Length: 499
Figure 1 (cartoon, one colour):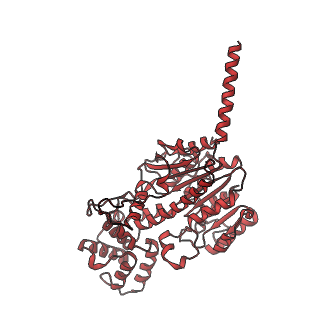
Figure 2 (figure 1 turned 135 degrees about the vertical axis):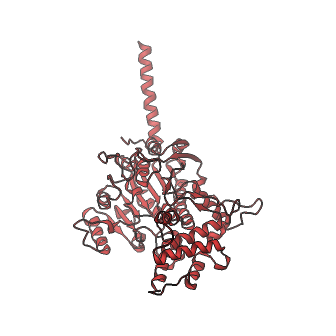
């Protein structure tokens, strides 16, 4: 009897010791980086591009890659990405898996497939134990991936309700892109212009929910830990209220004063690190995905670099608190079917040619639209000198260096752009242009292929996505597993529950 009692007491003691050890080793600071649309091809294309800037690929024994901060983390895993209702996922279903550890249907935000049961996110669980929570994205802050951490909606398109859940949340820091106010059609916002909607939104966030709202560089720089809860919107937003592409910001002086993803990440640390229970911060590189949808390799690469710069901020912080910090990096899915190779270049790569591009497809679209509009009723039969000069200036494509095949592709795209019709059927058009501007997408296709890089789709793919980790509890992220397991592993390491 004494022996049994002793064994029971010993077992209970071991449980207490184990529980105490697990809690004591839980990270105080957790960084969760999600590169939307980012998998191994996007990461390695960026590393190959950076190497090409210093040395041509064909140099024997030469530099073939310059490692990103992402790939220097010591723990590597791999995750599958399928949704409940589809093998190829979208960001809502994938984000729900990454945030909540649950499968759901495409289009659903942190709820079950029927849209009737809400799931708790790892960010909400972190808040329950006293951690401060920050959500950062380079796209609109009410987009699918950031939304799954704080909102619960049957449709990712319920932007107004997602925005309402954001301002009503008890999270501490929202930063990056703005809100999709152009999709708010209720009685309050429907009659308003976008600018008027922004004014109304700021008023509600500040006066009704106690946020500090900033959308200028000066206001952002002035934020301190005394600023309370913060919504920090980038001073410059694109037509979808996202941060401009990094390539545009780097090469266009009109974006001076724009705030980088790394700066938003550093500000989150400044605002939340003083909390005694620490913080949880999710940082999304959302425009990696958008650039891949448009098959714009150089825009993809520059936004991947911007995402990696944000990772470096977390790594630098972790060096100060190595026993208290966990960093986890992954993507929600691959986008575009990016392939590091092209049939016409065979085994050769010329990634240095990508450096000739200084503008993303969206800003180039605007230039092309203005150029074509200037024709009036007199539309030329072929690409004129002005448009050839634009392609040379912003993409390094000299007509004299192009093959007849490449010129033919561009001329077909021009016909489609200016006339709205061509010999192609609508299905063929979608295969060729993916729903984007024929001129812009063809220009990037030509440059990509000359560089030895190509895309097979303008949509997502189902290839597995790598997971990188470092710091406290990071070893649990090694191996091959489902995307839902990442949230479960985070919950285990952090000592929180998702159910």
